[in-house]
Image (tube, rainbow, N blue to C red):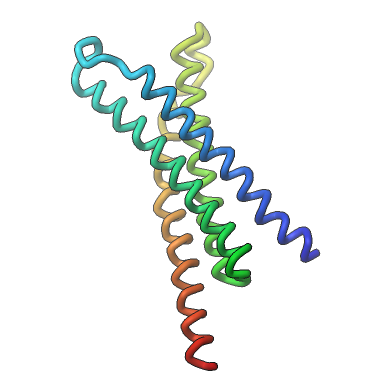
Length: 159
């Protein structure tokens, strides 16, 4: 049982890493295909740049959370609530990134095919849902790190 639990953390980390790298790859692709200001207007060009930056930042943030989880597991041999909270942060971050990747794929599909009416307009809400998971991800990861730090201090004081 302990082997399965330890490996589940690594499977979560691997999946989150793949999603983070994919998000960064999408951001690079979007950066190479940004519209010119004169072709679409200043607002649309600015929004495209902002969305590209959001994809890149979210991908890097998920990779940093995975690194933090690996650090807690390997270096500090943390168990209990700190590891659970950081794992929850990785899960929230990976889920948000996965939703944003799905939204990007669906928008690209809608814009590049004749089957425009087959994809519902509710796809646009996926972007907001993906971004709403980011604060939960940050809160869980920060709480896990703070709890680990406080428990370490508590052990030092008691010994």
